[in-house]
Image (cartoon, rainbow, N blue to C red; front, side, top):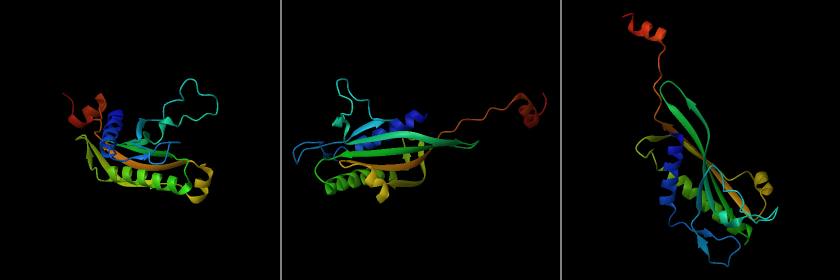
Amino acid sequence: MSFELIRAINQVLKDGIQDFKARVPESEPGEYITPNIFIGAVPPKRKGNTPGQDDKSVFPFIINRMVSGEDTETESIINLQTICGIYTAYDVEAGEHDIINLTMRVKRLLSVQQIIDKRFMKTGAINWHLGEIQDRYLQAFPFYGGVIKSAWNVPGYEKLLTVDQEKKVYGEI
């Protein structure tokens, strides 16, 4: 059920960012592409890359992953983290511009969704974070990142009673 939630959110984002374009890493000015969307993490580096060589082909990207959850007798909540990543070698202003635009687009797409796939219901606020100024200096230019956190109520599981509990509830036969 939880993997189905991530796939449904990926589809919402894929549909919602079709017209969104971000700078192509290390390209000529004016080259733009739609962000890649991944589940869990970016794919591992491709064979043939030398150690320390970055595989920039994954940029720009959006990653969806589950980070935690809580099950009660009445509901099941899954907390998702959506990570946005941009690489731009132009200048700091271009990187800031791109990560703000991508993060806000994703946040808006998640915010307007109350129910996804007719069974997953957003619960609580959507939180986003681009990093405090001291954190952002630790994130080396030309990489930029943003994080959006959301919580989703998924169809719960029925609690099964033990035989002793059934006898207590329904009585002896």
